[in-house]
Length: 138
Image 1: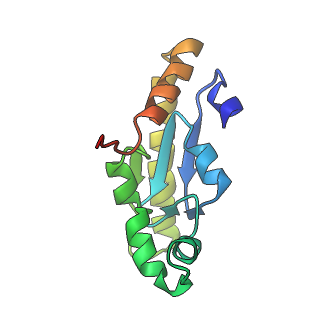
Image 2: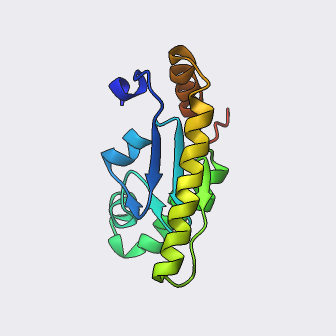
Image 3: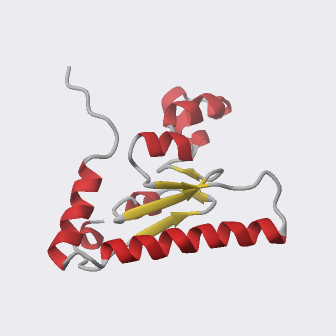
């Protein structure tokens, strides 16, 4: 993550299914993170979380709610930048629509990011990462 954060080129990550473990941490460093509407993204599975927290993996549904692993939750927490809508039913035609949406977002982001110099790219990535989630001082 430290090395990736220093890269002087734009990084765009897309969560298309289940992004988890150390890889989830790493792609969080990207300048832009997109996520399919029904994908999940976390550093630990809900089963693992509930096993650690409550010593009971059967509480995975409760754990998933607390973990905030959905696209909607992660967008609100500023972990991801864009939710890519998905159809309720997958067909070849619907799949093409998703690909077109992704292509549009990637092109738009590349255009935006290429307007920045290397220092701005790295700084934007740093600021984005630092502003994820919510910090409450007690």
